[in-house]
Length: 119
Length: 107
Image 1 (cartoon, each protein chain N blue to C red):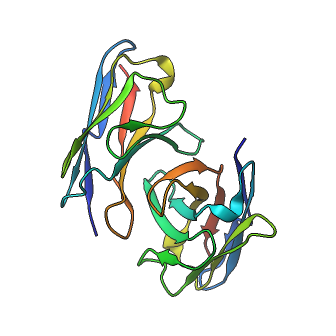
Image 2: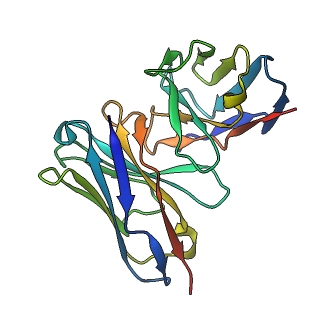
C-alpha cells in the first residue's frame, strides 16, 4: 500500500533553515509527481510546491518562492523540502502528497511533520 | 489566484440526514475541482476529483456536481464517520488553491 512518511520538522528560529524529507513506498516513486502542502495550526490547507516525476518541472506558491526548494532523489524514493529564511508564518504541519495527475490533485498524503518557527 | 469560497462554515446535522456543501470559485475552473475530507489529527483524504468522480474506495453516498464557478458536495445519508471538515481545491490555475473548509458537526 502507498505510504508517505515525513520527517525533519521541529522548532527553528526565524531566519534559519530546515530540511524536510518524505520517504515513499508502495508505488513507483520515479513515475509520480509529488507535492508539499501545509496547514497552519487550526487553519486550512495551503499548497506549497510541486515537483514533476523526473524533477524537470517545479512550481511554488508565491509565499515561499525564492525561500523554499523542492527536490527529489528517485534512487532513494525520497522527496525533500529545503526551507530557508523561515518566518513565523511558516509555522505549520507540512504534508507530502502524491500527485494524482500532472499537477492536479493529491491522492495520497503522509501524516505530516510539524514545523514551528519561533524565537 | 483563484479564491474558493465554501459555505456554510459549519453544518450541524444528525446521522442519517443529507449534507449539502457548497464551493464557489472567483473565476471559472471548468470541472477541475476536488473535494477532500479531513478528520482531527489526520491527513486529508481525496473524495471527489474533476467535480464528480469518486476517488478509489469512496462510498457511493458521496457525490459531487457542478462546473464553472459553482460546485456542490452531497453526502446522501450521514454516517457517524462522516463528521469532519471538508475542503474543495481547484487545479485550473497555478497556484493550486483550497477553500477554507466546511465543518460538518453532529447536531
